[in-house]
Image (cartoon, rainbow, N blue to C red; front, side, top):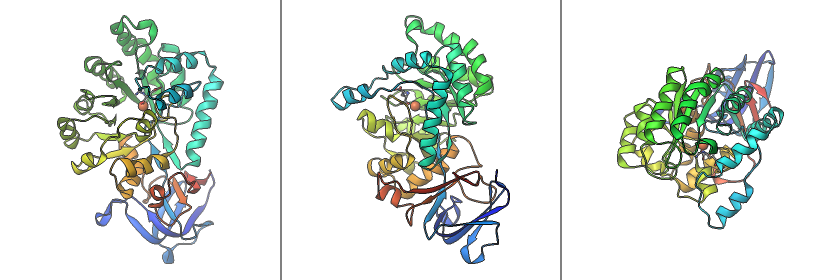
Length: 389
Ligand code: NIG
Ligand code: FE
């Protein structure tokens, strides 16, 4: 890491997410930010900026916290472009293609999987993502789930064991045995590399009883709980997540009033993944309904080769504003501080003293431009741990 202090100066609009003065984005105008030892050491008016060893002139641009992508499936082989084309020609998304990716992933070498994760991680960084969660879930046997997480852990501390993605073909007629495998030898092999446990709780994947059993085993092994819930239809997943103290329930596309009430009275974040609705041509979740009920909302990419092969948080912000009734400010907060909340992280998603110096200099004067100028590469510079990337 580079030693010494670094001043980011002449910031037209600094998004701090400090939540002060009733403005969740905590915007400061004509600001500067001092970095020391990879952390934010000071923010304030540019005219009061302290001296520093080095300086970046933001030229009046907007600076915001690096995006926190709290939901991504990056350890896989192959792609499913033909499945996407079929969907765009009218086929529905069922999750059935997951088994295709499982076959390709099992057949891939460690180096091939590592190269794919590295390529996608680099794509994300170029688009402003400085924190990413990475799931397993395309191995679905003891050895391939463990190696997926071992490789994921080379790239992030937020690794998630998703052995319960679907029941693999070889267990199709004995799902109870597969749940036993997940809770037993697979969890034992995966847990040393995992921070979180996740289950795809959905018709055709795992029902509430199986999901509860698997999440409880993960909790007993010291893992935090998150889950895929209510993506393809209504179901028990969201309320199960709240009941189990999940950090986040993800997708939340089909919600009942009881689901929204449960979330509103809880610490569980609702993570919305508009790339999945885009790529499966499905109705988008209604973020407005959740926000108006007081639920904490995060945005993430769900980057995976099936339902959402985008690594772009700016794309998700634009979709959330256009299609999910979020304001630009709400969407930017959800993609930064919201993602941090979904990962129970307090060191990222904000630019206040003590936070990691993970930040984006936009090629624009305001965060508004992320949704206002969709598809435009607006990420001028990214700093990760205070280091320009
Ligand atoms: O979050 N829904 C389950 N898992 C992924 C999709 C995985 C796939 O289609 O390969 C998701 O959308
Ligand atoms: Fe997912």
